[in-house]
Amino acid sequence: MNRLIVSPSPHTRSGATTQKIMLDVIIALCPALIAAVILFGTRVLLLAAVCVGSCVLLEYLCRLLMKRDQTIDDLSAVVTGLLIALNVPAGLPLWVAVFGCFIAIVVTKQLFGGIGQNFANPAITARVILLASFSGYMTTRTVPQNYMAVDAIVSATPLVKLANGASTSTYLQMFLGVKSTCAIGEVSALALLLGGIYLVARKVIKPTVPLVFIGTVFVLSAVLGQDPLAQILSGGLMLGAIFMATDYVTTPATEKGKIIFAVGCGLITVLIRFYGGYPEGVSFAILLMNILSPQIDKMTMKKPLGGKA
Image (cartoon, rainbow, N blue to C red; front, side, top):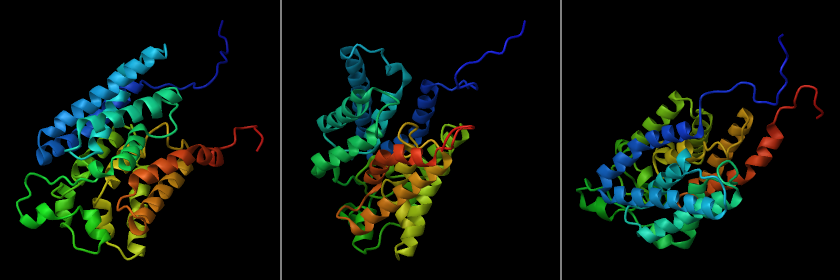
């Protein structure tokens, strides 16, 4: 006898798991990591290993002390470690990197209940805290090893040059990564775009947030009389828009909400870059919009069929 089975949603399920999604993100981050190693040397590998190892160990110890099921096999801690490594200078002292991992895993993630319950992206939070606490270390420029010109060795990062009204690297140099930087993962736009295309092709992320975020910065930069192409190829815009502003937990769930979120990120980024005391605003923009995500979801959530307004 056939029966109508009534059960709570979701009724449609996919084969995607947290582990598979995180594995795809790790693969997508590999081009940026490889580019960083080529440009800045093997210390990048040491920094990445320390960050990943610290994040996994801290998550294991937290879950153990809190007497909760272990979650290190879902690979989310590995992704957080890689993102932290790509968000800091190559010469950052390892103990500072470990402190950033503690902020990301223990304070931002586990104290709020673990994956799926954090209020902000752990890697973004760690970067902002490190910038506030260890600004000297975090704003140290790293110069690619293939920089041969003397003026390149002593020059500031492209964003600092743009903020001071000076000329910066060529578009091709910025696209490939031949420029000084304060965060090794943001150096090559080409590598980041390859990772983003992979994530979209694997349907891990939708292109809405990255395209609207980057597009907002481009348009506002042009309106304000700045070089829009240089702005999107400089700093952490590509890294933030593709890999951190698309976080499932801290980004609005609705399509309309994603657009509002991305426009807000772009607007705050431009305001900080052009009118703030710090040349980069991507991390601060994403963190602030993470905090607003629940309210954006509440405003843009569709009314259920038969439900009250």
